[in-house]
Length: 123
Image: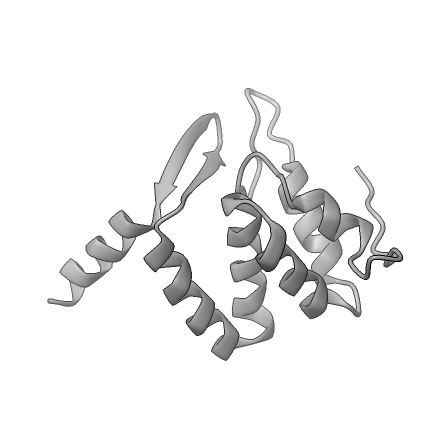
């Protein structure tokens, strides 16, 4: 799919508004035997390449579901590390469940579990 990053009257681009309710947080080829790029990943890269990427991902962070917010955090890692650190900490505290898809499997990422595993590794 091809997405536009033209901002609408509301300020956020079409791609930013489309990613708000994406069903999975996915990078890499997925799909039951198809190996296609997910809609969320296509939208993520469309937004990331735009001149308004940071403001669009701010919008996604404020208005998106857990999967969309995970894409926003991924963008903050690339665009603004301070923002990433702050928002990742808050995201972990909220403990949302983000649905991810890898190859032919669908899984759930529980941020609390990931944080506990990271803490165990540092001990």
